[in-house]
Image (cartoon, rainbow, N blue to C red; front, side, top):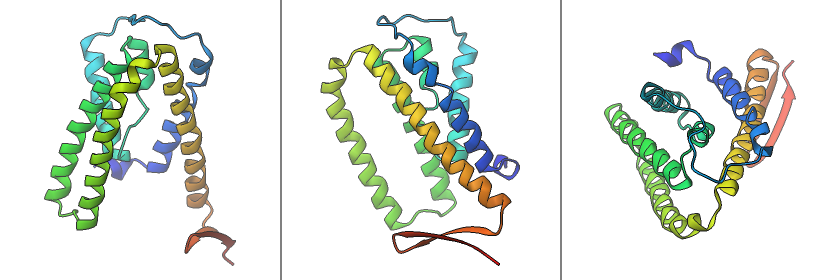
Length: 185
């Protein structure tokens, strides 16, 4: 129902601007301790979880969108990864149920999902050894960098979608691994 009122390209634009707004945090001196920078009431934590689920339902994923909140709350790298993993597992179980109920599963989709799940498990095992060797400051810089880079890429995509929606004479056509464009007379 929300999708009928929201244009995904404008949601993508807003999300991209929010992600890019993290650029100043990238250059700040990062705290080395796990300190809560501001007290967060439980209702705000629930709101972040709700927003993660809601935005994930609209866009398909939230990825790095809530990193800044987790950093400002003082969570350590293991806690952030565990929190995001718990959110993702719960959200994806709900999505799997809905997709199955709506008959949207295809054999190819299930195969790709299993490959992604295997990659996630292998990545988790690998990160058990790497993460303890990464300082909190470096982890935060990587997190903020991922947010800004994602924001720039998302902004580019949003601008292209908005331009195409508002200029019907410009069309981008994908031709067998090549990109072509032209004006329609």
